[in-house]
Image 1 (tube, one colour):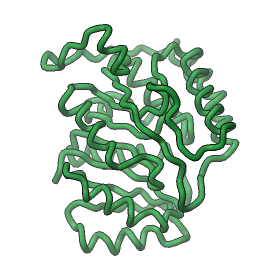
Image 2: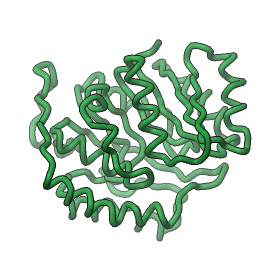
Image 3: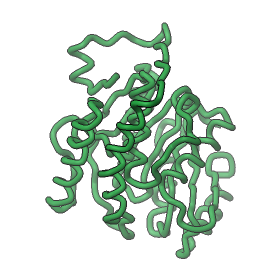
Image 4: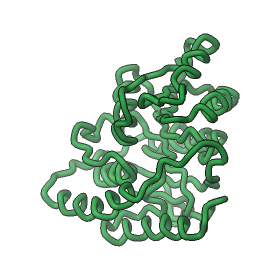
Length: 265
């Protein structure tokens, strides 16, 4: 078993499933992969089952009945990973909008540099998005600006869905209290990591829109995020967050270096 597990939720991703799995397994650093499939009618799970014959110790599949939401898929994966003592747990899309090569950089930020969470950030160094229409780019960028304004959380890409968590973060965050299942889930997980005092680094990436398959983004997902941020901020006023002490072995980062590297605390 490797120390890193890549979680990939799927719904109708038969065009991408085999390609993304083989790409992750081709990386010089070994990662295991867990596919969480929400009953894809296009046969995505069947493709994964076939590949498990080739990768029996590295590829795993959890099948759920029906489309239950991105957030619940990831929480299912987090619990699965913690039960098996993975130390680094990744979120990644199936459609190659996240470059699997960047898993190595997210891993290094946590395993080598000592951060608790690493975010593949589209906006920490300008706007690095390819093939999105301008209205989608603006909506995404302003969504992150809106989150920063409401919460005060100093993260440039608050809605990013490409991340590495240490097991320590996932054991601390009360997963049974996560409220959101769509776009706002990504914001809520960063918010809780920030409130608990974990060290967060934004790693610059280039996000490329899918070329195969169909996007799952809907207007309702954006609405959940817009109103959910206010609810999240208000509810936090009535909660106590016991800040997690930084391990003695964690490297010190100067204020200037932290700013340039995209560290949030």
